[in-house]
Length: 292
Ligand code: HEM
Image (cartoon, rainbow, N blue to C red):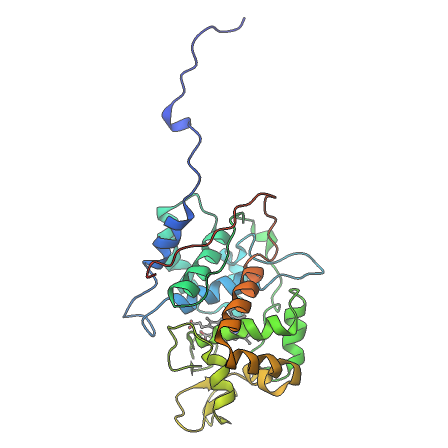
């Protein structure tokens, strides 16, 4: 027999409001600056986390990418390329505690967007839709670039597998305007530019504008600027100046900062979306920088 009792809807069972991602963005922005960390900002390491979580995509195998946030699990967290990224994951857990509904993949890529924008870079379009996967979704080691390789072909092999072309590779490398290398993480040492917490096209202007010589030191082969010896380039960065096709784009971005910002924003959105299946009508967000 059918019940005639009125159905009482508990307030707790009401469908939840969709997440306000601008609020999540603002919460991330609020934990970027810290004068006691590195150059005073977690922005660079947030961006590196977003890139390494996404750059494992393989266009042929159709796996890897930012969808399953598999760097939460031991195998991928332990990949050599990811040394030091636990610092970023841990700090971002503060935001996860505030907004438990967000998936880790969405949180990490949103942190990449916030880092770029809060440090003065372009507005980067972003969509939600990554889900938390299982350890069995983890990509194999070896899909991220090896900084010690001086040949453009290695960068091509790695980035073509993600679906990028030469222009996009050079645009993405402009992120090295930010942050630095750490001896205890990658083994390399030092910043690429004199303003590692401001997003600019300085990676290209420094690469072309200075004389780079091999650093004589007790560490992996890297380059230092002859004049001040305070800036560095990786062998993989130097390949961007040596290779003819890559160099063409380095020259364009060194001259035209607006063009760099525009191309970087497109390429990095594509990077952060690798391996993600979005709903057809997924909203495309453009977040307002907190310092605008
Ligand atoms: C050929 C490609 C690339 C190579 C070989 C490479 C290599 C490296 C290495 C060795 C470090 C130093 C890590 C450390 O010791 O803390 C680093 C840092 C960094 N990379 Fe890359 N990278 C590449 C592409 C990219 C891309 C595509 C992005 C983003 C779009 C990116 C963003 C960064 C950032 C922001 C840092 C600074 C991290 C910090 O300050 O903690 N890199 N990269």
